[in-house]
Image (cartoon, rainbow, N blue to C red; front, side, top):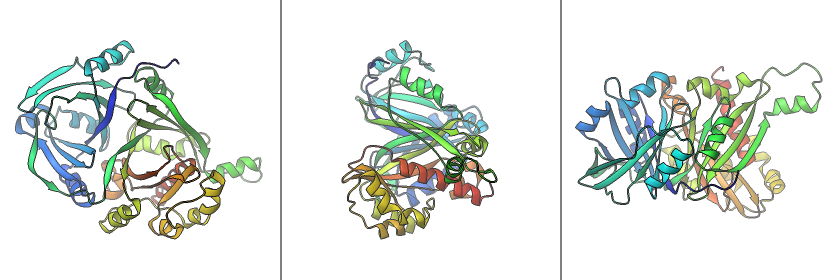
Length: 391
């Protein structure tokens, strides 16, 4: 496909998370994650939208969390079909009329015309579109003449909660899981104008070993595979990783288990950057945040793997990475990234309706990609967690 005109996205501004229990989310963000609660819906917006919302921020990361107030609102509609989850992504754009015209011409399904809202904070312009992301919507906003958070959201005179002592920066990327991802990839390319950035496919070790051995002996009865493709918007650097199950054992794939837990396709996780991942993870653990486990064998093999992929030197000691269970990957010389994954919300709260969404913490040290080794480590870590739950 020929290069298409940019939507002129400035950034992925916010995640909008729909939950059954706003108080529980407030405790997580302001206490465990040290985000500040910077605002909330006023009485009129709560009544009109039939949902109560709070806005949490750390660095340039913004999360809007909404719980239903009665029936008929967006949060209630989401939660009748899904567990807690991210149902809207908010993008700030340079020129919303330009963005709307391009999406409309390319077959994007707008939910309204561009709306112009004005209050004491200025002029706010917005519209939303439907997506192939399992019922999630994309909202576009232009706020160059708007000084508030959102119309109907009151900014707190003194934000409550944390002060971002873990050093969160911005949303690095968003990852979504699909039963079949080709429609989403085509939509992102032809409607959003995104480009292919990276891709990988692999199987768990037992399936790969069986393939090498030509099915000698009893055939494997478990294991699974994944196919992934990353799309990005070169104008803003916004990246989306997209996954689907890979045969054999399609039904047992952790991608398919996400599909079942989420009652459909959807956003699996969001990666948040930090300035110093060693300090951040150490302090997050002390603060009660739980992460997916990484086996010691990962670190036993790490020196050889780094040499094989061409990363000649890292600043961190492998003993420290092992202690904190941080993953490392890269492509060349001294360019690499460090990352770790929280348990999903259902695991954190011990409640299935809290949903399968989770956060990734990432520090990039010269590497812009998605390390294949870490992709596999995450995939197999999730499967170990699901196996421990008897799944």
